[in-house]
Amino acid sequence: MRNLKGMVEGSIITGISLIFLLLSMYTPIGIMQFFMPIPFIIYGYRHGLKQGIWVILINIALSFFIGQFFGLVFVFFAGTIGIVMGVLYKGDHALPAIIGGVITTLVNFIIGLTISSQLFGIDLVEQFKTLMRSSLETVKNMGSVLGSQEQINQTFEMYHRFIDMIDLILPVLLINSAIIIVLFNHFFAVKIMKRLDTPIPQLPPFREWRFPRSIVYYYILTMIALSIKSVYEINTLKIIVSNLYPILQMLLLAQGLSFLFFLAHMKGFKKGIPIIVSIVAILNPFLSQILIILGMVDLGFHLRNKLKV
Image (cartoon, rainbow, N blue to C red; front, side):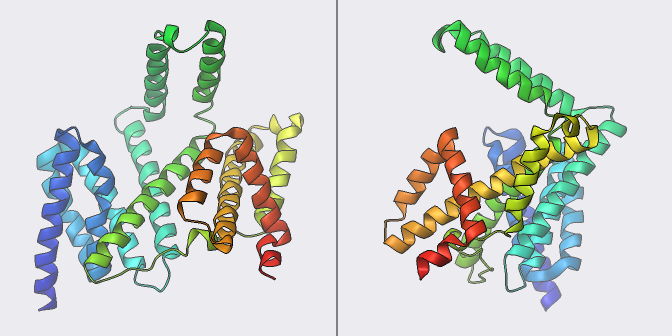
């Protein structure tokens, strides 16, 4: 009976997945590809890894007839992320599913880059850089409506420097992309599974997020390494520091924002106030630096514990 239920739900999941694939590849709403892991999350949670693998294989076979090679890639990518997250949601906490999803996404990225380079001779990173440069030139040609020529040149010079650094900071770009994809699917999976009366573990409220105190020390050491030219010129250290620094900055920024939400909750402010303040702060480089410092103080001196007393 259980196998029959699994087969029926597998057929439904397959149908939904293929509809998402069709919408992603042949309609203007290509954003549907970001929702593709969700059906697999549901199935993985309900029926486990073994049956989940069979559903992925069936979906891959059918997707080839719809989208050929790219359809196969989309389904493999979504299926593996979804099944891994779904199986790991069976614990008491959401964090293992989040970490498992991020690792699976990164492995998929690496597999995709390797296959495209070794089998097809396509350098996806270089193609992405070329596309970005082409887009910048198109926007630059509209410069008359963007401001003075000097300002335009400075802005575009900064963007071109960033594009040239993509090879160097590729790891951090992939990690950030993986985190965004997984958190996006986690958010919607929580909502959908709640509606299906099979709730999955949620992350703790953002105001309760606390990262390890050691992040502060790593951040300070990374800043020192960046300021020492002789250290930064060593290629291996340059790659490590260039990728570690923005990751640590992002974590400390999140810690500062978490403290902001904690403070707003403690003072009884409406939920919309810290959200608006956070958006403004993230968009302003100066305010972002203040939040990073706030995150360092919170971690280093257990600031919120002192406020609770």
